[in-house]
Image 1 (cartoon, rainbow, N blue to C red):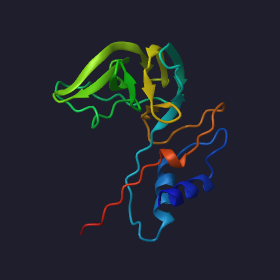
Image 2 (tube, rainbow, N blue to C red):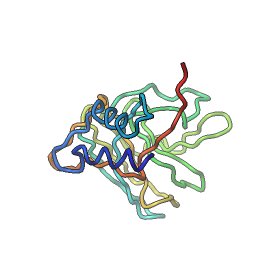
Image 3 (cartoon, helix red, strand yellow):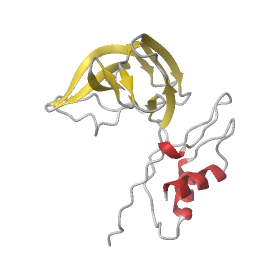
Length: 186
């Protein structure tokens, strides 16, 4: 199912410069993939891969070139796995703990980890995010390890239509597509 959805989306014109990812067209392409799909809830996120040098302070400037949505700051006791910030990374190991970077809703990037009581800030300022431009700057992050080929920096667009800048290709990679099937209820 996931591969069929990805292939259909790529046939519908992404994977080229100056192409836009229109949420309504993507939702329609998903609906049209298999006759049994009657509806879908599509959430688009942008991503940029970050390949830090392990054990060394690494930095990156990641430009999504689309405005990002500002969510509420984390509350005491809130679970970071369910929180939807403007910027969040995939997990990595930081000072021997599984951690993530996410914005605090005020333009600052923090390294955080989940605890039994909610979350703990491991580094309160590892960079910045400009919500209006989509520019994310991570400074001097020292990573012990990470899974896969890179740490993924995710950006939640303010609008569900992602405007493809002239210098970048919008692509949908099968590995980055998540499909959850739920039975229809009457």
